[in-house]
Image 1 (tube, one colour):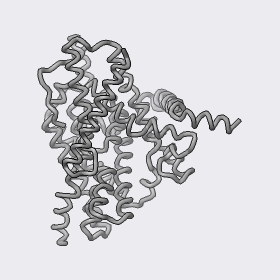
Image 2 (cartoon, one colour; image 1 turned 135 degrees about the vertical axis):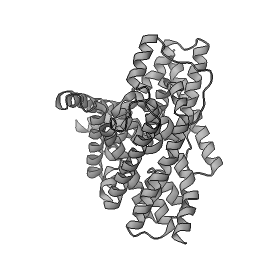
Image 3 (spheres, chains in turn brown, purple; image 1 turned 90 degrees about the horizontal axis):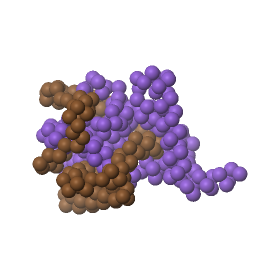
Image 4 (cartoon, one colour; image 1 turned 45 degrees about the horizontal axis):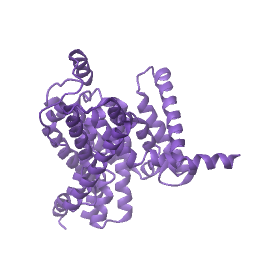
Amino acid sequence: MIILGVALLALCTLAGSLLGELLGALLGVKSNVGGVGIAMILLIVARIALARGALLGRDLRLGIEFWGALYIPIVVAMATEQNVILALRSGPLVIIAAILTVAVCLIAVAILARLCGPMETMDQIELRKAATGDAIPVPSAITSDG
Amino acid sequence: MADILAKVLVANGLLTAFVVVGAIMSISLVVSRYVTADRIHASAIAIVIGLALALVGGAVTGGKNGIADVPFLSGMGLLGGSMLRDFAIVATAFEVDVVRARQAGMIGALALALGTVLPFIVGATLAIAFGYTDAVSITTIGAGAITYIVGPVTGAALGADSAVMALSIAIGVFKAVLVMIGTPLVARLIRLDNPRSAMVFGGLMGTVSGVSAGLAATDRRLVPYGALTATFHTGLGCLVAPSILFVIVRTMAGQ
């Protein structure tokens, strides 16, 4: 049933949010610490567990994948409600600080990516999976380093 | 007639938002195909249209929620709000290749640390260059360069001036906007085509909104990897900015 997928997704999101709030309170921070990340890890664990028990039906997957597919439209809606005026109006410090920060971080991304050597691109991964018929890898254990 | 139409649109806010976003996506697909010859991804164009609408909405209503402040478009706030955004981001984890994510573990953690410290140094240095001398203001502005949530959280914790808080939020928002628009443009240059570089990117750039939109505009398949690290970014920033980083700034400022 499709609702089971949606319910599982909602349960993981709620549990992640709750754990993120608790972690924030524990650390004395006024913020949710890694709630979405914890929820993602819970969903990955649930997927592996369901796949092991052969419970990962087509409808259940559909209930989750539908929301994943709606992700870009949701991001577009999010873009329409940003306070763009405030960002543009606040003068040169804002503009210089933002541009410099983004530039420095992009350079760091490029350096780190090069330090680690080449890695399979998404296109190559998809080609390999199509060739071997291996859709979802099921490893023996997962770590939660984010 | 107009009244009745407005009433229906407001009463069905979320449905109105589906139609509006659908229209934006359609226009973007056409522009991407026929104006840019598929060179610029439709999602990137859609996000820029979204930001332009936010500008129009802010100018017309004087509010701070972009187009969502226009009464009959208030549903955009629900569709683009944090509840559905987080719900959809978590759903993308269903596609995560766990083996790849594990390989990026250590480098992802390093990226997170750099993504907190580098923006802070840039922000704090510029704050000093622009004449701020007290440790609280310098730290708050530096924190804003991490994300637009870390800025105000840090400012509130340290008791910063409200103008400084607004400044730090603005830096974070502008950073997120730059990441949204700029990512597809530099993707090839920084080798943003595999899960590991997406996780490094998420950890370094920080803002969940900027990272997720920027990656969506680059390659939809990279989103879950970037989001996985970016989600810890704000929490880490809120943890270290008002504590360790503030103490360091105060010591260096001699206060």
